[in-house]
Length: 186
Image (cartoon, rainbow, N blue to C red; front, side, top):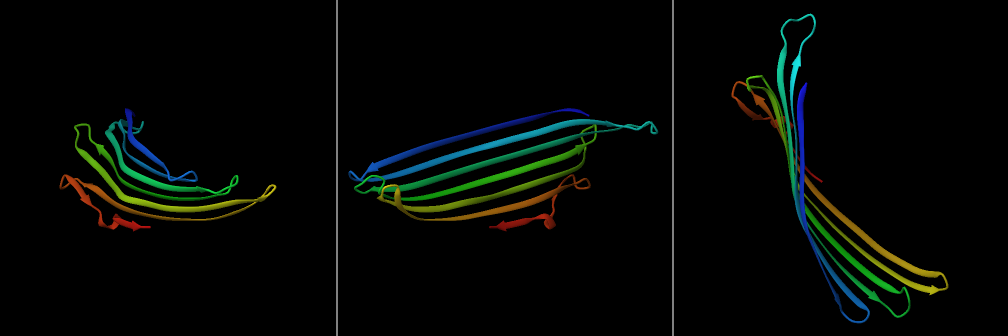
């Protein structure tokens, strides 16, 4: 076989933060982040197969392409209260994120003149989101002792939609394979 591969990735992100002092002991912070990106990869290989028992050679090419793209955003808020005394504080945090992504892959086998012999196309898409929160309290009790209490929780949800297509040589196009379609919500 002889051929080559290609790969590429691009991503971009923006992030901002705002902190506001509500008094000498209180701090409120708001963060925001947005980004997107994409990835492409591929391989093109030419094959020449034969055995010593056969005179004819089998020649074909294989094309494999994959692509993935995504967008996401996230934001978080935090509040911190410092009480009189060292290391006596209350802190609350809340975080939310959302991601949207699409992925596709194509695998084809072609004859030397370029006619598609067989092929498969797979698609996957779906959003996901996350919400988490945290509350922490600490208070010194004297010496090296202190009281610490807290609570945290997290919620995640994601959807995956998958589809598969096989090349139909008689029709010259890709036909949807309903038996391989899947929708998952978790």
